Image (tube, rainbow, N blue to C red):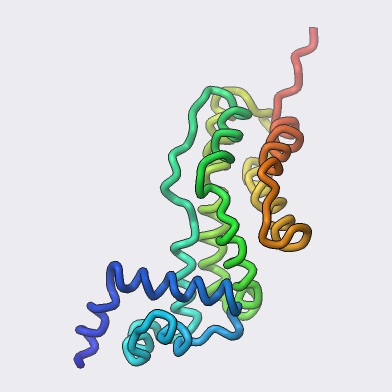
Length: 198
């Protein structure tokens, strides 16, 4: 079969099916044990087609990681940073526990595969904090943040803390009240302007 035909068959819905199968395997067995042969078996794909489409395991995983970030969530706009953050935390799919398991499965690749590390940084870290950064930037424009607030740093506090809990304290489980407490007791106090002195 010509290579162009094989590539064409791996586009669109079929390609997504393969990438999702790879992500499922990453959750189950991790990056080190993942092989293109295993992905082919899981997704009932031709091994030859997979090897033509992706030159390496890292290339396949890099494409799969692109599916992780919740890039299409609608940002709340209540007029208050606290209310916006609480509303965002309650959006279904904003913090995906399965996504965190996937990141755990990719842990070794972060250190060994620069290509995969960069994909994780862009799709999981940058896009994963984009919604928080946007809400904080909008609050700054409203005058609801201190001028010296480091938005990049603050936007990483919630996902970093939640990830730590999911990996080390309560593996695979996230206290539904954790995000609210982080917002009300950490984020909002850290960024709020100082009260005007009379």
